[in-house]
Image (cartoon, rainbow over all chains, first blue to last red):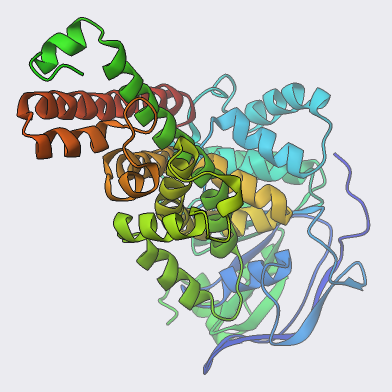
Length: 240
Length: 230
């Protein structure tokens, strides 16, 4: 898979998102650059999902702007996202991937091989004929990952990909995330599972009440958190 | 049709007059549903996926038109197609064509209104995924129609039920002419008023049997498809 320069770095420049009187993201300035996975952590409602949606280009900021390799308003050709609750098309697992391949303009001659490769990558080899909506939650999450990867993205956004999954299913997802990152795809994911953040993150962004409280290299963040919020979070206290 | 013969006998002996009536009924109602689907599904999809001024009014009107009284539609089509009417020159009044037109007008709002609701609900579910996949407007519509196909088939069946069951519109624009525009429902109305109740009851049984058959076929198709697509 290629990793072109066009999408990265993704820069948030004083981005705010407001819905009525509520401020969901508050003056966020942030750079997402190539390298190990960036993990967004923070309590529910801290703005993780909104930040991912803005980064993907699904949501326009109320103020500020987002640039992709210096350009604004680039279509999401080399970006892909796995939603927290992915919607499976009413087709077989393989047909779900085929749909994404077609949407990405991959010639049909290459579909069969790519589908098999992607299913194998997420550990669903041989399950291509299964109706996607009858698969288990963990399988659907992995299929959504395969579907996102069908776009051959340079950046992959994952919104709490392991929420509500058991340890085995969580491990399966985390293994795929590592494999994806090893291929040079920039992974940006959210979680409120501190253990998962420790296992996967190269870089941490802590969000609280719509603001970036602290961000930086993961080991430094976990070793010596600089802010009271980060210290509380790392110590496992409830950050409300 | 000899009124002294029992309806069961007519069916069992394959009475040609009875079969002509059944054939015409199916032709008129299936044609009307087919045309109404070609108009109603794209129309429902269009209203579901676009935002424009007066959209709420369009939805209310579409929903209200589901309850169009067949006799009123019959009267309106009668006036349009009568010799002195705006479309009188086509000479369609009292032909099966007129009956197809009337039933199409009855069925189109049902298919459009229910398709609009179905496609809009599915769009709510798919919006984020399709937007993230950068799918263009036309592909969105075809994707939604395809993925809603099970519900859309049920909607077509509702439309077919409406068409096959109604008598008010086709009796006015078709005229219930023996051997030409007589359908099961118009024949039942006629035989009942003539007092030939056994024949009317027999025809009623055949009509209900046909509606069950069409629904059974659609159900079978759906089950087969569903086992593949989920």
